[in-house]
Length: 47
Length: 256
Image (cartoon, rainbow over all chains, first blue to last red; front, side, top):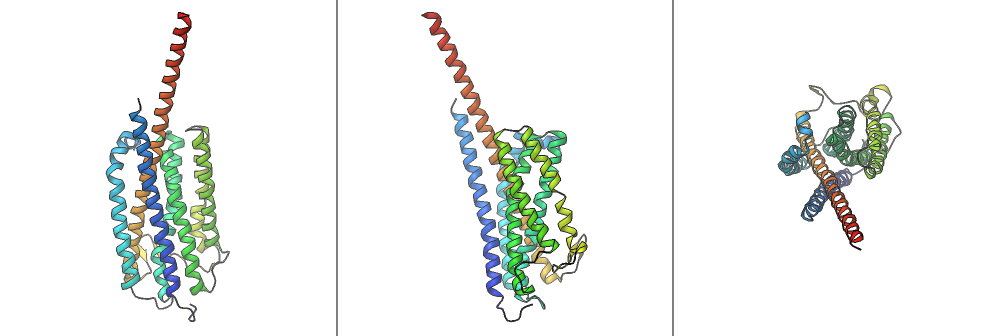
């Protein structure tokens, strides 16, 4: 362990990347799913 | 298992399971990360950087778990030709790649204060980087195959998914086979070398991230399935209109 370094900036950077990446993936997947299902329902409506 | 390959039955299950998995996963991840960040003690050797492991370790497991899911779904696709297996394999690729990237980034951030370097080309880190490149190649191949529909291109993607699985045991055993800065596995089947003060938030965090992974896979499966259904409906409609147009023009031709 490097004693001279303050650990907290490393911890915060890792949490920002981990939480940010995971949340972005969850939100993107949810929006993509809702849009795709709306497109399918619209195609179903057009007889 | 064949019963779950029915798209209508899958959609009935996925409609309530997707939000349930995502909400439960978010609650567990938020709670366990707060526990790890504010209440778990610092480690005697690693200091405060031990808190990074609550994100790094579940990401590593899910990066490997994502490819294991792809390999199993690819095998089911090749043997039983289930279209839902094709969709499941494609849906697992993005979350698998995201967790692999998070694992590499957080591992690098952890390595700087702990090892004194951001990166070393040892067996564990290199094989994990290879896994990320395999995900990129799989996604490119799956996108190209999707343009051809579910056919020969899809089988090539499934074979790639199976062949790429060889990297998963290599990642797992890399710390045993080669000299590495990376420590050997601290948690094996039924055994743990980790103190309960660190182990419990880690396990709850891993459960939360796994539920999020499952929820994202279901959401992406629903999206891919809806795209296929919309495309099929539009194609049928276009064919009907084409047939009607031909019939009209032949009637008009006969009248003149």
